[in-house]
Amino acid sequence: MIMINIVESVVAALGLLASLLLLYLSGTGEVEKLRLAVQSWISLSRYLMMLALVFAFISIVESLEFLSSVFGIDSGSVVRLANIVAGLFAILLLIAIIRVLANNKDEIFVLDSSVFYGKFGITLLYVAVILIAADHVKGLVGSKLKILFDIAFLAFLPLFVFIAVRFRSYSELIRKGSIVISPHTTDVFVGVSASFMLFFFSLAVHSIEDFAIYNIIEVCSLSVFALVSAYYGNEIEKIIEAAKD
Image (cartoon, rainbow, N blue to C red):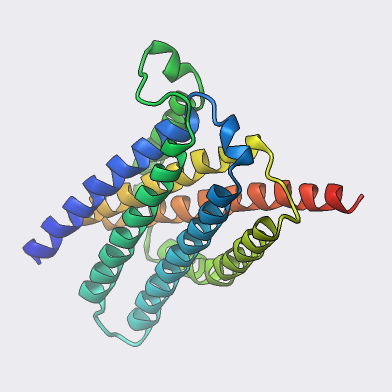
């Protein structure tokens, strides 16, 4: 168990670093060039699809934990190992997205005080508020409320499968040249980085066995990704409708 805790902590730390770098790249500077980089958007849509599948996998794992508890089966170690695997795969995808954004960005790693007044700083503030709020309400999470969290994980599963299919279809439309991506949709990666920051924070608190706050933060991470995906999907749908006209 100690070894699992250590591995979980390391994965959480690496994931937080990757999420922070993605937030910096997507939340600062100009990414206008990315609008014309069709190949980049094909790759990015594919990576977003895979990230949606990662969250779908997490939903399955957490749902299985709920079903196991119903039947009195101890699946704690299996769930932790599955989340670690999901975290490692997510890190690889985040790094792949970082590479694409870095290759299409005019200026990177220019850190000054003004950075914290933009999307980068505001998003960090939002994440901090969620973490503080989760810490304050964790005492209210009893066994009955925990069941609601488990049901929420199960409810997220079809949503993330739908999101993955949607991202795949967008990638095909971009590849065929049916739609052109507008530059402001790169904001989606600000939200993606925030969602994975929360997920890796949940792994970090899980490694110290604070299970109440772990469930709260993990549900928040899935919720943020779902909202970001809905925003991205709506923007793409607007572009598709405009292309028809």
